[in-house]
Image 1 (tube, each protein chain N blue to C red):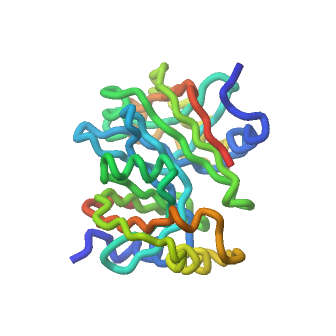
Image 2: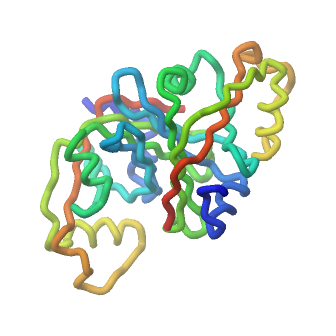
Length: 129
Length: 129
């Protein structure tokens, strides 16, 4: 059973921007706006191996997503979990699928294709309001 | 001189929702939507002493704000810093000033008034896009 409350799963199903918190090597918190998708088991993010976000995750796989409802900003969901899958995306198929979810199109190939990965985060705790 | 880039200071001046990352006692990251205001020196948040956010900050004062532009979601600002001031707000004057900034009104007194505090975060690093 998922830890995501039924009442708030729409916040993961809609193409909203999330804010992903990861832990930096110096022990401080990093938070960045992110695209994501939810397959009912894992939350998926796209990044590339030269980013701090990726380096943070490979050192400490715990990460936390915060997303609120633009139409009702007090309605929000926080998901804490662990990145359990790091999938090569040098084909950029994952990147383009996620871009399409957010209504974005880019010309192929994209410059950082060789470094592209997908991160799959398994939710362990959720808080909501 | 502020670490906030001139090009992105509007993201702090407008009443946008931010997402604040703090570190929990178990070493995992917490991220919550927040109101904030910016006085040119400190970022101010309202919270209360019974919240995890407050407990996190009193154990580890490092915190990180992420805010993006709703009209141009790829335009964002991340501010990492340290909570240097924790100010009693049991008068709730700070709470009501911040609520007004976000177009919200509440009836006085609010139930958690005795526990209300303001957190003042000094920016130390900023990243933006």
